[in-house]
Image (cartoon, rainbow, N blue to C red; front, side, top):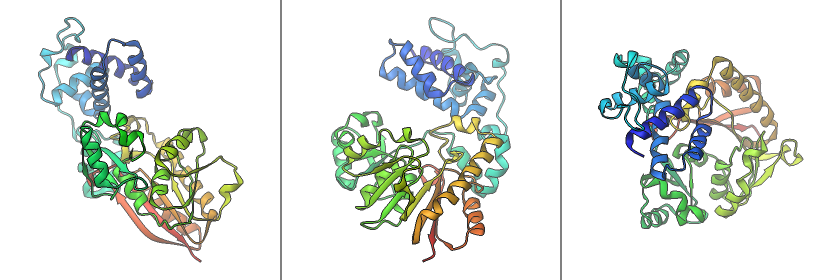
Length: 387
């Protein structure tokens, strides 16, 4: 595909996304219908689409419309590229700009930061002086991070093995297990280190959350909102623990047995209502459903689909989960409350409310991370049940 044809493909995909089709589904449908597109074409089109979604407001303003054409056109202009060389209308190229597209406007403050108007006050309150730098960071692609499986290797050995396959990495300070991929990330899944469970894709901030958890050999641990099980695998690699993973939707954990086997660790899956989830546990990790505002670089659709009503619903779910898991912790044990949110109302606001309505608990550690630290935005409050 020519560069102009890739733009046309991205425009069509973005129009479907703006019409309500999830991004991954729109990309998959295009890929199936476009057998002529090689792997390089697919990667380039995907990058165009996700860059536009991260910067939807600013690109739309610079492109003259919140359409697929407007977003792609605005993206080129924001990058300082000459649009006339690509929007020619020749062959598979997009038609030349017309109408409002000929009169681009400079984005205003919140548009330039690609921040939803309604969320700006809460984000300013939560982030303080970091508001603008964090929102700017969320406009750009996230780094690719690997978690080194310490049950199978160490960071230096993993880096050397990856380098031998042309995958260049560097240690990241957020966690002793974290490697940032700086060259050839698309070779990862074919690498021996990945296929044989010595490294796993996981954000560095997520790894830092696991590193902050108190884990001792033999501890009985419950990952209550396990999702795909990334933190379960990271905990199992840290210490020989009796680990159970639970999720309200067990289908999210369907790949966990295969991933655990590849990593050489044991994780027990628990369905909702399984008597084994009753405890008591030495540690319960509740990485609760949240706005995902800390990971908008990776999932930019969430920035635009979040509503005040959905945020209120999520806060109610978070509060309910805290009340559900607290009785599962043994006296002297720990409850770890985590989110990938930047909003104080989902973070310390929730644990402070929990401590006010529930006696017998003490906060022993708190960790707040934003994209300025290198990884995603994450929050951890570690609470201890009085013995």
